[in-house]
Amino acid sequence: MQLARAQRGIVSDAPTPLEPRSPCYNPAMSAPDADQDRPTTIVIFGASGDLTRRKLVPALYSLHVKGRLPQDFRLLGVARSSGSDETFRQSMRQATLGETVPSTSAWEAFASRLAYIQADPTDRQEAAGVRSRLESLNGSRLGNLLFYLAVPPQAYAGLVATLAAVGLTSDGAAWRRVIIEKPFGRDLASAHALNDAIHHHLREDQIYRIDHYLGKETVQNVLVFRFANSIFEPIWNRNYIDHVQITVAESVGVEHRGPFYDSVGILRDVFQNHVLQLLCMAAMEPPASYQADALRDERTKVLNAIRPLTGDDVARHTVCAQYAGYQQEAGVASKSTTATYAALRLFIENWRWQGVPFYLRSGKRMADKTTQISIQFKSVPHLMFPLPPGSEIRPNALFLCLQPDEGIHLRFEAKVPDTVSEMRTVDMDFHFAEDFGPGAIPEAYERLLLDALNGDPSLYTRADSIELAWALIDPITRAWEESRTKLPSYSPGSWGPTEADKLLASDGRSWSMGCGEHAA
Image: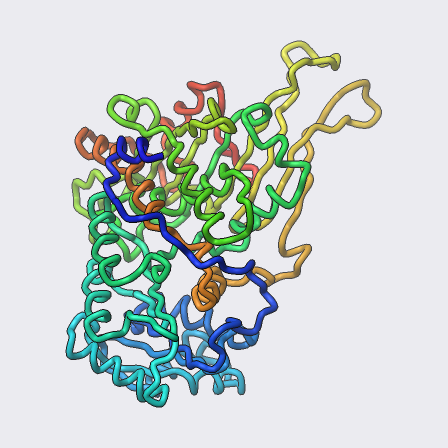
């Protein structure tokens, strides 16, 4: 492992993180088991932003309704925008309940725990004001503190340093934890520098780098499907699986994110985090236990085993493209060469997956919004049925549908009645909505926030994993940027450029869309 890390340019000498051995998540728990006698405050920096309104506060309110927040809970919003406790409560109420829904007793009880302070948290004097407000909220006792950095990435390091300077990161009897949003760096060098800067003030077990994809119930179900059902794991390897496809497709364009997206592109925005995390969930070995360190170790081993793409390999195993009309989007450079679509062919060099290609693709303005993992099995070794000349048996396939058609589809062959041996491909389906009821799947941020309160980092990304992912993506990004050639174009509403189809066709394969009605 050390040799592989050195070859990929990962120079971090930080010790392997020592996480607390957290218990398995229990959805019936009402609150964290420990520290019930101490106040617990979530401090959201960037509280006037879209993430707080759309995701964080609604998720916390849902946890409150379910009785899963600590008994002595507070939420302090911090932002540079002017405001008061009351205006913050009204804004969050509208975002959570809507304009026409009357306040309920549950909301009033939740709203009474909300407070707001106008401050620039990177300014030491104003950060001291945040500390004073925390002390006033909790009767001079700071208690447990969970900081959520919903701020621009360039503010992460400075904000953590300021919190440390005013004594808000040192834990004793009470704990201190910090949730950091993506993107965590824009390449290996910046991610490494950010890790170093934050580790100067925080231990690794205090840092929670969030990737909301890992908080999705359907993503977590991949582990349950694989490791709680004995019929699948014995065939989850190179002996039976021909290849694996992972698709993260969006039907929308860059929308209001034009300036940001044009500076990062599809690899930095989606592949380095979401897509590689899905690959890890599909390819990881069975952990020894459902503990944070065991789970994260296995995900990191997958990243460490992926064959890096460098030099001519990038041209052979990757495709990049841009949807027609992207350069006319607001905030996008008129001659931009930023990729809005990417397809990669990766190989995991270990005993389980040697020789099995993993095809990854993601793009904007595609035919449909879908996230899925497709497991394509090998063909039967011998054709015994009297089929018409030129006919063949379609290989079995398993589709893990993560969104929006949440469920699992198994494709296999069945005999057509009243024929000698005619076959038809049929599906065996499972849908979360049908088996657990509509609305059964909670927002991903609910699980992630509750895990952070409970001190369970299982679904958060560790420092070494972040750097390994960037080490895989950086050479591809550099090769694309250095080529400076005009990108292939694809039509909005399609499944991407023809070059991506040729990537699989060169291996005698094609893209599959088993979770939806649309064919690739």
